[in-house]
Length: 252
Image (cartoon, rainbow, N blue to C red; front, side, top):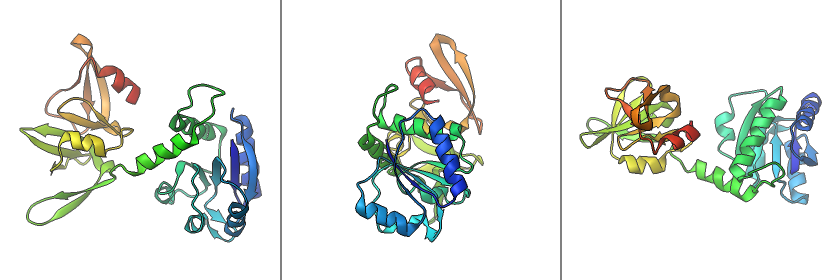
């Protein structure tokens, strides 16, 4: 794949190239830049690559300044020694955020994700980069926070990362946080299922939507069903029907 590398450290560049050689992917390095200025000039005179490796701290400033002047429409793998820019990175077309030194194993996982998003089915199959970008844009559309009404005219901001599961009881939808706090939601479970990232949440049954990190145990149940143990614990068994078990296995 046609690849641009944006990196200002020679040692890091050598390490990245070595990792790329170890990964079983056909990289075609079409450009190497080491600053914001050089990168802007490169994009002004070249067609869009299929993949960009991007360091964040460059010789003349932050790489995020590039996005103010160039609409980069291909997937980006960020390579950096700092972990505090991850959220900012995923606001653009980032498929991975790799911390230096980059290992071939880290890079392989990023490329596997790229292929998965692009729908590549087998070795030798070309990645559909339009499908990758569609998948990335779709993920950007999922909810990351909710403003939840509480007593009076107050609202509480709740991050989806705090939520362990949603459930419905007596017609009321509630969210249980990792802290065991519970909030009443106005949306139905069907509506929430459309708003939440399916990589993070799974519709276990008609009563529950669960977060991946909330699952602490799984037991077989009669009739080919499964019972989930969640944290915080639930007052009732969370059962996955026999028909839903294959989808749960694939999701988990």
